[in-house]
Amino acid sequence: MENREEYQGKIEAQLSEWGAELDKLKAKANKAKADTKQGYHDQLEALRSKQASIHAKLQELKTSGDDAWEDLKEDLDHSWSHTKDAFTKAIARFK
Image 1 (cartoon, rainbow, N blue to C red):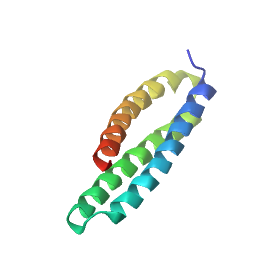
Image 2: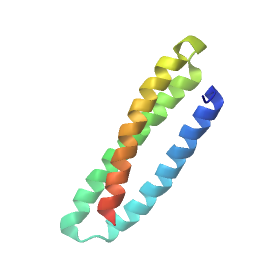
Image 3: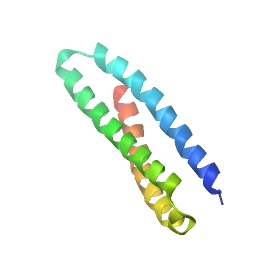
């Protein structure tokens, strides 16, 4: 089982990786034809929103007491799983 610091580091690393991936996808979206460009940008905005939500939950987890840690971790895990799926699907659509 991961300790609190390891878990936070893992989530921070994933957020950073997703941020870099979003930048790459944005560059691809900007090169897309006009009729598909808006759809790509809408998808990217949704992903950035999900990323921001994960970041906010991580900040809450960082400032929480030990008694709330497990509940917050569970909530963050759930959100992270859905966001990871969304990123995977978006990356596949952009390729």
